[in-house]
Length: 454
Ligand SMILES: *Cc1c(COP(=O)(O)O)cnc(C)c1O
Image (cartoon, rainbow, N blue to C red; front, side):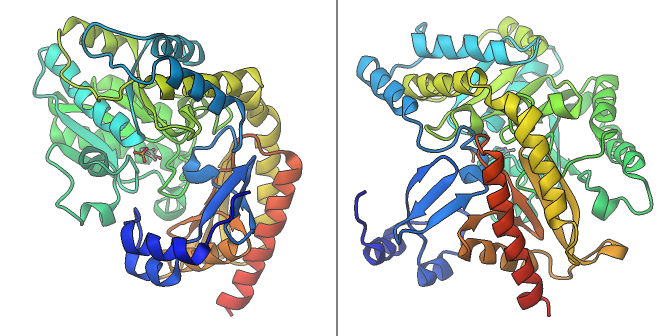
């Protein structure tokens, strides 16, 4: 293994590299941790520490690190056709083959995909697409998109607007006009004395109220993550999505699922809306599509919207790297492996249920851990002040960050989203590795309760 000079890398990183979503000055003082290589569910840093990656990178390395086949595919494709575009009456085998494969793994009625390079670009593409769709239908006034508070849809101006992260809106006058938000379906905080099922219907009615407030003739689409990821793995009650779907149909509002995290097996089905029990008109993907081996995203367009777009003449939208041959070839190999090696199926029948059982056992007896939840291989719990009253800590996010730092020190990566502690490991994680990860995590939460809270 190549030797790295950690101090020199840290200094040069601090001098020349602006980190996303970071307090850069304080990071530069601490020095970033230098990750040098990875295999399976493990990362290594430049000081030789072996780290369990309980987050699959940024929720994306579904197939695990260190695959030997994907680089081979990339090399071969790069030698054969490193790049060509698909704008002007051309196509290429890699993008055609990927599209055909995606049609096989997608639910019925999603015959077409549009390619991007990231989740944010998928979301922006979808936003332009739904507006274009209504234009073609002769309803150009149907423009408003409804997102949700604490939803995450990326960092571009469109995606950050549609997302409901107020700390993002604050930086740069977002949201843009034509984007509005409703409250998230987070029972623990907003459910009051309702049962989760009652609350799910209530939260869906917030969508209906917003549609009526704006006027159904002005609303283009409602957009939500089947399970909110970056918002802290908020899993809506079972009643929520079917009711949202009914409402969208009633008012002829397009229903969009942002599957950037939930897609490609994370919840045990290929796509999160299949687990959550609803049928969108469009869904956006990225992350697990290539398991992070190369940047690529895809918008899956349902037949109704696709027919509208096809009838409308030019759709004036696209990226230089839409359907990039190398990314498309790697995505194809990744999706084939997720399917043909039974990885998605194993999440559904074996490792997912095992994780959920062990996750609940492991964290069920801590005084300040509550709302222990998850499905497939996406799970979370919330650090709370008083379980008996469903009372959160006063300074939202402070405890989460402290707990997260203890994991990090102990060579386990889990993430804090506010005081939600979340995990989404590579889908190839074994039962033994789940046990190992949870042993470390339990010791860390013990330390947290002892050292931080008392
Ligand atoms: C990560 C994420 C995005 C943004 O994807 P990028 O590739 O970072 O642009 C959009 N939507 C959801 C649900 C995500 O989790």
